[in-house]
Image (cartoon, rainbow, N blue to C red):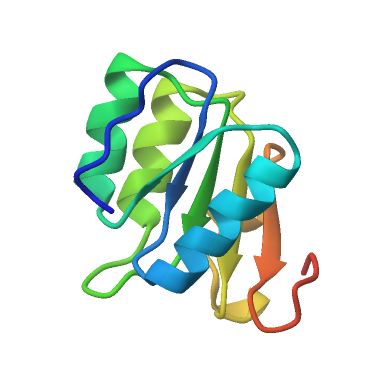
Length: 116
């Protein structure tokens, strides 16, 4: 993870620093017939998105050393209509308004596997 580059536009970008969860998300995309590329750092994900715009972004809100906020804001600024799935272990009250009220973002509870 992290060193991968998106090979073509239209792939799903997955920003997740836990390898098992990144693989799960990529496998789910594959089951749906959609190719996906995983990244474990916001910088790698955003660099790839500049050259090859993704079809959607699956975003872990709490990364190892940082929040996914910077990646979310950069992607939202560049691609205002890009679907984002923010999957997180953070409870809804602890998430910022920019995520909670974004019409193109869906929240998924990692533990329960359901939309918050």
